[in-house]
Image (cartoon, rainbow, N blue to C red; front, side, top):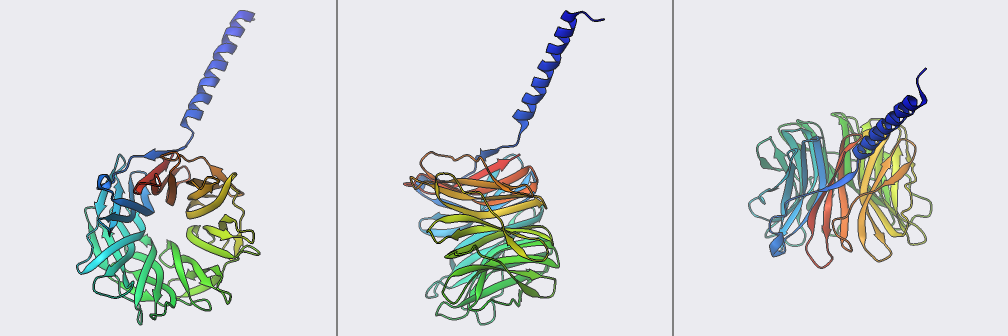
Length: 395
């Protein structure tokens, strides 16, 4: 029989060891952390926006947006190499006066496609064309996307590539100078872009986002306006040959419902996020789930002390894991970062840092390459100064 003193010593040693293991687990728990990013020209008042991010793995990401310098906006790109972010600027196409990249998709480390708009010099009004850029592992090169027949202006908001030689870009086009518009989708086959025929809800609509789980399986979401002028969400599914409308519900009594982004882990598991304005004038976060048959509303939590909550983007690395990002506005009118996570049952708010107190911080994009490895991107400013890029990593 061991003596009590020996037993006590052994017990203490075991407890200390268990505490040490627990401490290591707590220390290793994933958390959001701000990453340093370059902002070339910020010292002279240039400002930046980041609208989308796509990662092949934890050491290869691309974020896109716009760099505004001396009142001229240029397509802006930042790439993550696993150790640092590097800023790159895609030249404006010859003869154009500005450009902006809104979406990016990287199916491989040496294959990314970014899309957006470029405005034409010498044209009246806000005439724009869709713009595409391709990364081959060494450099970015500009691609022209054909205009929709009968279009007077085309805009691309998002792109999803199921493979390096298969991408779908979505947005909208104006078909007259009165401002009437319709949804727009184009497909890249590795050689060229082609316009696809898309059905439209009554009165037309526009796509805000697209997610492809396979070459012949994509879901696009967007917004259309009903007879009263109220914006309501809709979705369409691509089967490789045609698009089909899939209705999306809006919260009862909503004055506006905007769906801003979509992510799919499979053909029967998609999540779309955005925001909605209720009858009481409150802007609240919106989430909807596709189960392969129909869309259904979910219930993101209300943000304590917030007067507004927007979800701008979502990424679902697994059928039971989604991460959505955006911003909320507190009672003082300050915008702060917002991250929410879906665990297959419910949404919960995750803690996310803000670069400066009293400033404005948005996380407009997110991509998760694993359930605990995510990158979020956006911008921040101190209300009196220019916008700077903001990147946060989780894992």
